[in-house]
Length: 155
Image 1 (tube, rainbow, N blue to C red):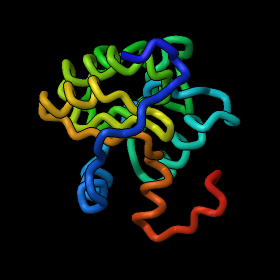
Image 2 (spheres, helix red, strand yellow; image 1 turned 60 degrees about the horizontal axis):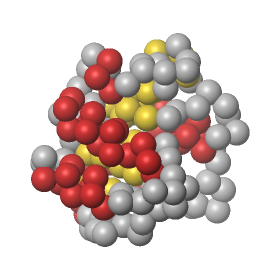
Image 3 (cartoon, rainbow, N blue to C red; image 1 turned 180 degrees about the horizontal axis):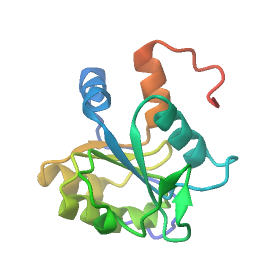
């Protein structure tokens, strides 16, 4: 177990591109845990991008009532609709609790953003039937699968 919340493991495994494409095609409701209301933060940029591309974003941040025009929830258990993907923008030490919540609410996929991986939590999620993506940005993967240029990640 890692004790430094800023250090991260390397992903132990990630789905092949075909499965990532399936996740992207199937996802409708994306709970973004740690979504910031600050437009300068990556989570805000990713949330805005996903919303602009037709996905339903569900902010999960107990410090805000609304982010990007959507009602924010304090935790995954407070989200009233089905969650297809739990997109994590938090420190590594927060991942185990978020994965437990994702399993409890019946999410389909746990997606740990670029720079985030947690083997024990990934294995637990897979064991509960969830798909797991580690240390990849959902926006970058969406753009890549759509054949869009990645030279300007913002926007």
